[in-house]
Image (cartoon, rainbow, N blue to C red; front, side, top):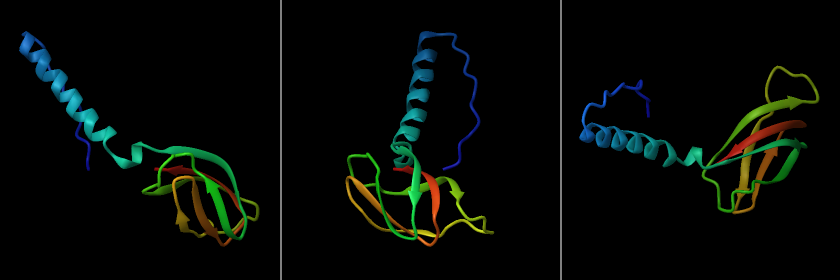
Length: 107
């Protein structure tokens, strides 16, 4: 969903302020209703080659995850390849092809 630039609304009458408040509430509802907003950041996750279990602290099964930072022990031309093999309300299991330290946003 593309975001449109904010509009300035001049409030001259009481009903204008009600319309402005309704517009703000509607905009915030679209943002806060998004799955990606309701997530947790976990840093300093040390991955080994193979299967890695990560406690995500969401308290529910995630709907997605993003890598937001990567530090590799061995310098290469590419990021480690990661894929999810399992997840539940507590644990996200990722399989990695390289040793690295990552930060995740789990949502």
